[in-house]
Image (cartoon, rainbow, N blue to C red; front, side, top):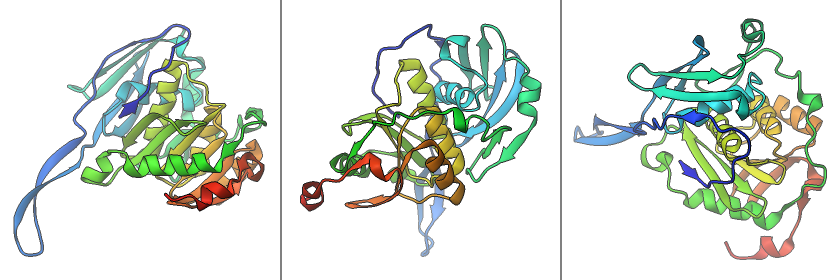
Amino acid sequence: MTRARASASGRRPVLSKASASLTHEVEVLDERGRVSRIAIPAERPLTVYVDKRELVTLMTLGGAPEALTLGYLRNQRLVRSVGEVVSVQVDWAVDAVAVATRNGIADVEQRTAKKVVTTGCGQGSVFGGLMDEVDQIALPPEARLAQATVYKVVEKIRTQQSIYKQAGSVHGCALFTGAGELLYFIEDVGRHNAVDAIAGLMWLDGVDGADKVFYTTGRLTSEMVIKGAQMGIPFLLSRSGTTQMGHMVAERVGMALLARCTGRHFLMLTGHGRLAFEPQAEDAAP
């Protein structure tokens, strides 16, 4: 996990520091019967308890479990501000995290009863009302992204040290400034976990999304686009593509989606007016 700290605002919850090992070594045989050892990504369950009530079990690498928990509560719209949370305590001995809130979650049973299964890998469901708040989201209309910044983001991801390069089988998400400076980089077994962890870090550090750029190695589904919009981020980039519903939601909220971002190539799917084209950036050497 790469993390750049910013000033936190409001009351900060008490957090455990329970990062777990991100890889696990196993013995393998190759096509010639030769024995070797390789690293594979770790995967472990994390059951979330809120005010002593079991809420959900997330499958995760365990690199940023406190941030993942906070981001999950934020993106599921169960907690409105980080100041509502008193503490987040992870205990890997029992694969659980205990969250204490100041005033509880109103109508939590009703709000968590209905689920929509999504295309997210791993834990791929969100609580009901997937589209309920989309029309209330207002992304900054003046936000623009320079073409050179797109290339800077893609190059930074290409050279970023990662679990994927070491062991494969994980997704990565990153948050950048509008100038292309890396703030956070998170990997997990599912892209939804990685985006939730970044949402949690943004909460903890008081980081606003209005002038930020979000990158994911995975596809831009409706769930990913909605979470990005809830985080107030006007730019979502992916080395993969998008889905029809992801495209529709992005158009609805005025978000810029850039897909197939590799090298000097990208496809801008929505928010065309948000990109500042720069011929000199295209012509410049990588």
